[in-house]
Image (cartoon, rainbow, N blue to C red; front, side, top):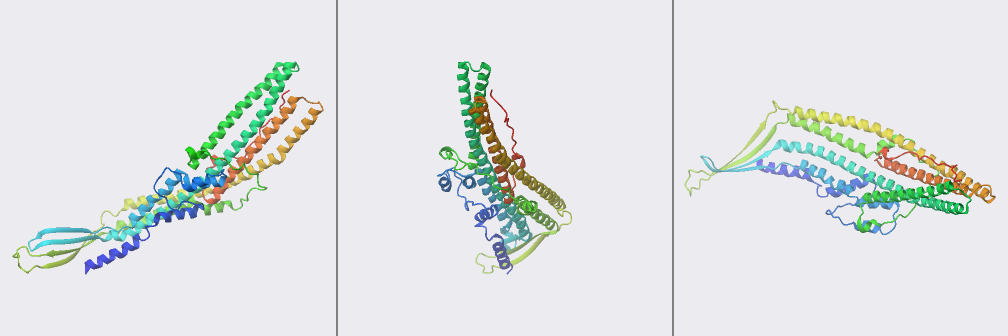
Length: 471
């Protein structure tokens, strides 16, 4: 009767503790997808270096920013590793939910009055502790899910920022090549005038040096574009024949106004995936402390059921084969070791994690304010350059052209004015790229994973010499 009750108890508890584990991996990925609000592969097959078919399809057309993010989320190996490593916490949860196995023992001739003894022993205390251990592992899995979702959002920011920087590098190179063409015209004019005796060697040499220095600048921008492309390439996880993709768009125009950031501090706290992960860890540590306390006062309890069969002194054909059954209980009383050390360590770990959580909340509020300030400043700077400085410099060029046609200024003054306009246009492009990079960080903040502010430069500066003249 005792054996039957133990068997049913183990079956019921086992069903309650291990149910739902078969679909755990897909459940974890679906949860991460919901937290990150980005499409993820719901299942991850065997590790394979080949490209996902969906990624190959996306690469069939020139890339825009959002397509690049989709490719990275599907193909970035570091992110895929983070998603697969959710299985570590899932496995620990399965182990924590598992109930202990019974111990079986068989003895031949164990006593003088029996020929066979069968014994089954079961650790009741481990059965009691299993649900407590499962709670600890459950919250650890939740924390891992939140951190994986933060990795997804952070990767999206990195791809958007890298895409903007590549767009900027491409357009800056185009502008620099235009400037190089202007300097080439100035150099050719200087050489012709020098041969005609209209200018001295110093003026001609000045124009030649300006052209050659611009060539060096163009070469540097070509290298920058190649580097920006490779940075984005690494985030996308592409190589070989799949590395020949093209950009679909140029940098978008500035919006009329920067996003409003009233109440951004509370919003950042509410949506933060890192803080959510920290809260889950605090829950796990709290339950860990309770588990250690319970282990300290709970005796180690084991029950056993045994059966003795036969009489070794009976004749071989003697029908007097007796079956005797019994049960027992063993426990260790926690008189000396009450798990105080492990309990104190768990309490200290909880207190330390709570301190870090409070500090992270304070830092996040400050980061949200700073990012809002940077976004507003980047928008104002880029808009001022685009709407005030560039038109003013264009008027300077127009007036210089009129004076050149009236023979009031020379060709070098005209070329210098054109170069100054190109410098201002480069500054406008740089400021616009800075705004969109900061905006990508703003999006990541609102999605729950703000970027490191050291990776965002702040407002672009305008450092051009609009009064430079070649003659």
